[in-house]
Image (cartoon, rainbow, N blue to C red; front, side):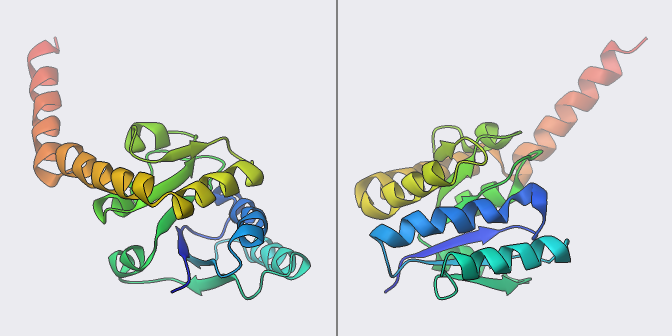
Length: 183
């Protein structure tokens, strides 16, 4: 089967979809069968058109596909070998946590709260660095042992830190702390 790389993000400049498109140029040089599927709404039609032109310019129309919105992201995550988050900026990236919950290797840009979400369970690269993004993707594709190890660690991290029960406990703790420390 063809190695599947997945991006779950709206099509918008801040999500830097062009970064992953450019990275795929380098990925395909070493893994010609690699496919990248991008799921998410088109928030910026002008930027989407730019991305389509970039795909044509780099001759990646067979390797990179815009798939639109999905109502079942977990199904798509589970089809992928690697999930990529190529953003220029992030708050706390829920898509990263969702992918980790599915036991997927995440390759992401080191922006905002990404490092906090991933910990040591994924591969981080600087933003707007398509060559480094490609190198990390290729490392995940080629090094099965590393990928499997990080997948297990990612799932364990989510189950330990990002559960509904943990969220409620943390929320209660903050609420009680504020209740007893306010004047």
